[in-house]
Image (cartoon, rainbow, N blue to C red):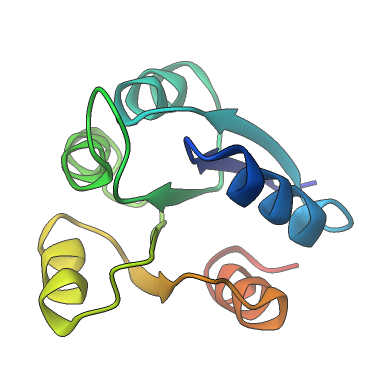
Length: 118
């Protein structure tokens, strides 16, 4: 089963993501950007779902650091800030896709499948 790292500091958003992913994927949680970077170094993840606004280190910086060492690891940015400038900054940070919150389960699963399959 494919492994997903969910970098999300908000409990309710994390619970929603687990509900969406539980049938098709294994997942672990990072509660901030630094933890996400550390977990990617230690774990074997197939994709990262990266919240942009997190404590300690934001998702943009975490995505940059992850992509430096793991350029082929897909990162999907998740954010309530769905402005074009936010989208552009996410892509510049190395994110491969950008999904606005609230997340649709259908769109989320299709987007993940596009990168790593079901």
